[in-house]
Image (cartoon, rainbow, N blue to C red; front, top):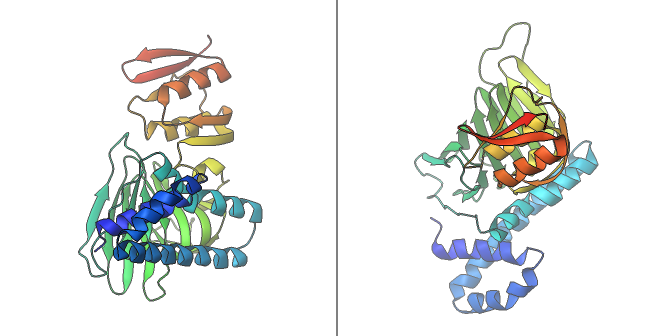
Length: 317
């Protein structure tokens, strides 16, 4: 089982890999040299992230287009997501047992921060607000079931045990990969950031919509449901969700508000006279609902008011 020292080593690794990491160097050296166990734990953390980094690099050389999008996702949203979480103080590590652990349920509440969990196999799970997973690690397979919400999986390399995510009738099998899985009202949404995954449907589909297995490569996004699987356009915001400040470029208003409402204690509500498909561009902090609503109102010439359901945006100021 992971220890407090292991957790400290993880946090020190993330601090040193931030843009301002140099200013933490002296404090880190003092911590490392204070106990031989500190040095050993940090060396283990470095080995883990080297394996993860090398796995992603091998996968990226094999992956198909779009190369530019794949590179941006890998650079900005794999290890960077962890560093960003440490930077704002929202990271929470939860090490879990050995390889033969009993199934474990992990969950976050609505409006909570993104939580980072390290599994016993050294994989990392970033769990979005109002999300839940069940983890079952055995000698033969690493299985995670997403029961609600959204999660990012940074999969540790282990050729002897495949890593499988189940979500709403879909099965995602990872191969040294970083990917997101989310449950939506229409099915399962999958964003592949690096590596390769195979997606199969575990439920019957209509005969006129046969669901053949799909192999996804870096930079691709897929919507899967009982009606089949469909490739959909990838937005950078799809992969940037662990970080609160997101850059949107022509993203539908409804998507922006849905992202914000996952984390907000006060919801943003659109009046019936506001079209959810209106496109929005800019950089917004989706965790600050009031500031976001004010910016959206100004940008789209909407009226902002309070209602019993939250912050209401309506047309025609």
